[in-house]
Structures are given as structure tokens and as C-alpha cells.
Length: 217
Image 1 (cartoon, rainbow, N blue to C red):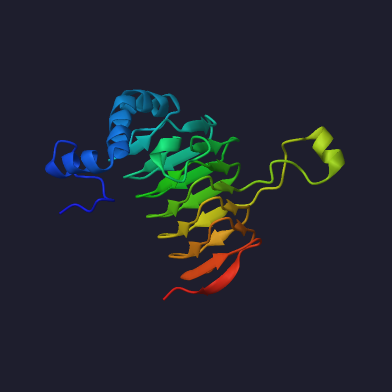
Image 2: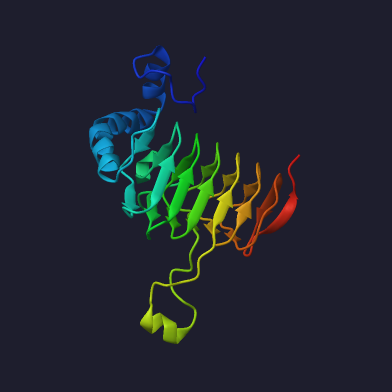
């Protein structure tokens, strides 16, 4: 029997009918997703991205891909970009951005994200089965220089350093992951954290700045 939290395998199945009765907003989300599907495909094609296997988009994300950058996404992507698509209420659509020539953003299979942004000026690599909570920001750049004189002459030339998020990482809502960070496989980042340094595999980390709380059992 399909769990009440798990989307049914088909919208025409008995479990889908039960879900529509018990949680009508999920049925509305699925109807909206299917209606938006042609537009979503056009949006990704215009950005130069081939539509992937079993992608699900709840609302349209914002794709800002520099034509001379690399943006790849694996199978079974799930992005939630509308307030009604998640009870945490994303503030805005998911934004995927590669801002400069040569920038790289690679996202593995089974990636899920609600609201928030991923912004790559140099390189962001995300592994498989990574889940990102609502309104989180992942960026490999400071955006603006720290030096006030340089901010006047080169206002968007902030420092950059690659970000690597390994397989099976879970990132809590409203987290900020900054440049030069690696998060090891299987780790959990607590909600509202600011990650400024590497997090090893298999731990729970939280806080501002994020620190290791304990190993995962």
C-alpha cells in the first residue's frame, strides 16, 4: 500500500484517488505540474538543457545559464518553486545560475530542492540523492569584493572557490553554504546553518558558523 506521504505511481491509480480525497492540495500540485510540463520543457530547452528522466517541477524554476558555462542535472530531479508545493512555503522559485564563462554546476541523480538558489561562478558539484531544504542558498562566490575600492571598480568580482556536496547529504531549510566548502557523504546540516568550512562525512553539523554536533548513528 502506498504511504500517504509518497506520490502514487500513477495519477490514475486507486492510491492516487485516495490521496486526492485525503490531501487535496497534493492533487492540485500534481495537476499544476502536468499543465506546466510543456512550458517547463521549453524553458530548459531555451537554456540549452536536455529534459531529464522522470523530472518533476512544481512551479517553474528560474534558470540563469551563461551560454559558455556547463550545467548538468541527473535523473529524477524534483524542484518545488511555489508556496503551495511544500508546507514550509518557499519564498520564491528555485534559481539555478551559472554566471560566467567556464562556470560549472553539476547536479547528480535524485536531487530535490524547495525554493532557494544555487549560484556557480566557478564550480559547484552536487552528488546523488542530495536533498536541500526550503529557501537554502548554495554559492561558490562572495559576489562582491571585500575591499571598498575594488567594489567601486569591479563590483561583481568577488572571491570564488569550488563547492562540493557529496552523495546522500541532507541540508536543512534556510541554510547558507558558502564558497570553498566540501560536505562529506551522508552528513546532515541543521536548519538555519551557515556553512563556512568543510564538514566531514557521516556527521550532523549545525549553527553559525556550522560545527559538528555529533556523528550519525
